[in-house]
Image 1 (cartoon, rainbow, N blue to C red):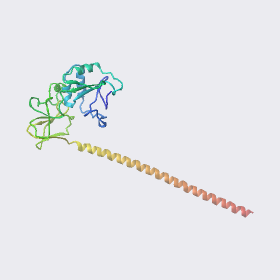
Image 2: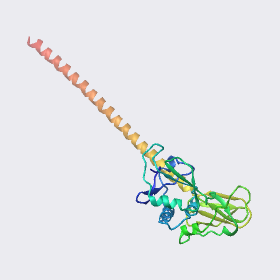
Image 3: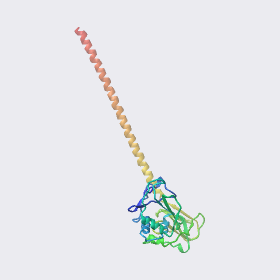
Image 4: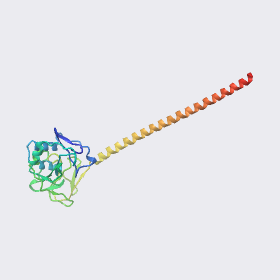
Length: 270
């Protein structure tokens, strides 16, 4: 029932994440997991087992704004079977609002969602990094009132960037780098202590481009080797054909000479 490459939560229950809609070919394969735990699967499991009524808060740091539960494989497709515990769990969530949708799809809006590039200040600006229980820490933190981080100077606080945590992400303000930690153990946060404009960038593309270049080079070498082998094969075929033609001509000449010798001998005997 799910598009792209679903991740299994339990028997008969899986999930998939898409970016800004149904996704495209770039999302056919999931990114490699960098931790032993799956935070989305843990969040869904906590909701289905009745251990949380704040699923929206738990998945908000991962950028989840909508939760869609397909009941059919398309408008007129085959009907699936939704686990009863999932229906009950979604109805019990305090931060998910049911939206009107097609009959083959249940759609919920996460009211605890916040922009992926946002600034938190005030009493919520201290966000736990690498907590022992990430889901519980996220459920106890309300960031729905956060405001988007623009290009203008911002007041001091905590900058959140909801791409998956990676040491290649860096934020600068006023020409200085900002301390980098994973909020709730999954995404990126940077501490802004002075009023300044913040720029976020990833500096790990050099290694990526190097690997892509090496892969392209290997493909070029493989194609050259393959084409050279084909040329050698064609050259060998031509040489064999020429040799066969030379042998055929030589055989014809020998036959003609033998016929001539036989004729001379016939007249000599006559």
